[in-house]
Length: 390
Image 1 (tube, rainbow, N blue to C red):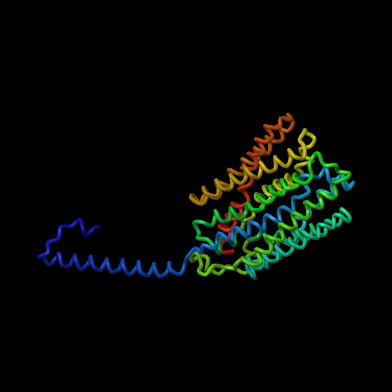
Image 2: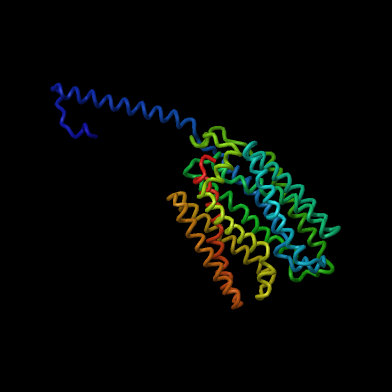
């Protein structure tokens, strides 16, 4: 473009020099483009990545369904099996309790042997645990055996999303990929809130039909886990034929070095505490939503519907903020907005429940879901950013 600014006289010596210089620039540019094209030829996004995300999400669905099964029907279960509230709520609490001791071993397994092996382990525990929960037909407390196994499988799913994004997607698509994978858990929880309502309704004769209805519910969920687990075993691949980008080929730190570097990273600890509060509030509400809303005139069906609204709105929020961060890379600003918004919505929900106006309660719980749900995927991606190359 600079050369075109000068008039060229084809008969002059200067014009020959300028033309030679122009040809040199052109040759160098062509050589650079050729080298870049050869480099780009080594990187490509595999179309199979969409099947990978789908298989992962389905596996997370099946595990989350088993986590939350008993929460929306806690009152009915107390009457059917004549057990206290804590015995029912322990079925969900076991997942959170066991995540602490299983979290690090599962992360080590995924880091050492890859996401495919980690998902195989998680799907196996979910599959076996799903069928062992049928022991509830003998004694209510035997259901804990199956819940414990499914709970052990959960970290093998929960610790995978960021790695799938790094292995299968280009950097500009990773935030959205991580978002989709991360919200599989709350979507599965939403499904888990709704499924019991098809088996145990307010018209159910709990004394006569309660136990058989609960058994049918658990068998249905076990069949779902079986179909999904077999699909993962058969079709999930460890990595694409070609890496999606140069960063996907970068060798990461060892597990021990990663722990050491994170422990010394103050930015990580700030995110750690913020993320823990957000996730803790969401899990608490999911576990005790039925007994929490019951005193304010909400039925079990209302509780299930409100939980589904919360998660549905959260799905929309995750997509909106995921797309925004993908385009702008403003992780910290987005995370701060979400934390402040979640606090305001939770505070408002506490006051609105006192009025016993069900419609307003649903509005505030939708806002809470919209602001709180994106904290999960954005937290994963922000952690990757501030701890690289962990």
